Length: 97
Image (cartoon, rainbow, N blue to C red):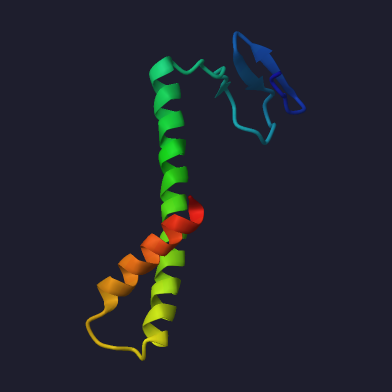
């Protein structure tokens, strides 16, 4: 339903205001168009990808914290970052399965 301001009236799908009315004159009314199937699929795909990205970011954050805890527990040795990361990643994947 198209809302009209006081002093405005519809004429051929346009809102026309009376002189002196503070709202803009001849505002176009564009009814919402129905999206085509390509737009719908792209939109759903984009939402799915964004959700997957958020899940991966959350998982990476958990792995990062666990790897840091493992590194601290081992006395903070140099050069063990990948080992700590992969071990934490495997540990997390076994917990979620």
